[in-house]
Length: 260
Image 1: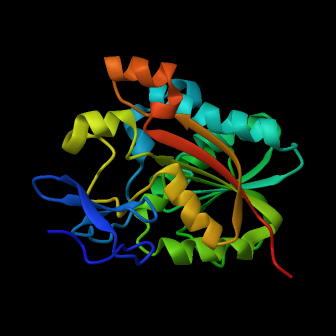
Image 2 (image 1 turned 90 degrees about the horizontal axis):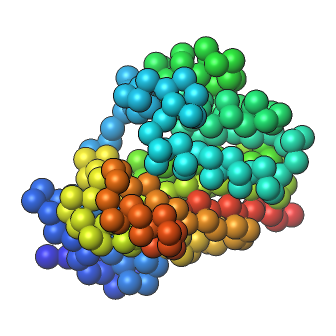
């Protein structure tokens, strides 16, 4: 059985990419993105703190795969932006990346639904709001908005993206980090790939698939970096670190130019 149409682009070019015990992943051959079937129930994250399991006070305390992911994003920012910009991270967790950027001289702010994560971030002297986005609590305009492993959790992702220009300066940029379901690891591990998370993740992207979505919203690609978020030391880990284009994660930097 396969879905009648793509829940992202609306086309009918659908096929199964994976059939698990309690879920399946359908992929659209037109836009290249995939989605979980059945769609997960909406989950609220006020009482959760993903990084609490690592007991990390700073980026260097994280497991290697998460540490490297954050450092890649920080390096991408440092290589493309001056220190005088204003940065917002949506879904900032404990503020580990924001702390790294703040210590480097950037003006940062975060928004995070988890109360516990917010409290941890504030102990690091990070300006964080405890709320979901969009929210009227944000009155500033930002040069760069970071969205790291967030879009897959948002059912109405289109409305979410449409809300970003409201808090953006002209020519604002987005830095979006996502897992890549077409990487070497998910192809090898199939149903056992750690990033399917069918009870939480609505969407599964590739870099080209996400760029398809963003172009329709008025964004242009600036930079793309591929990496791996694979867990554990395996042959696949070695391969994806030697050949990042095979990895199961990507970092996409795009620019939005406001139309007059």
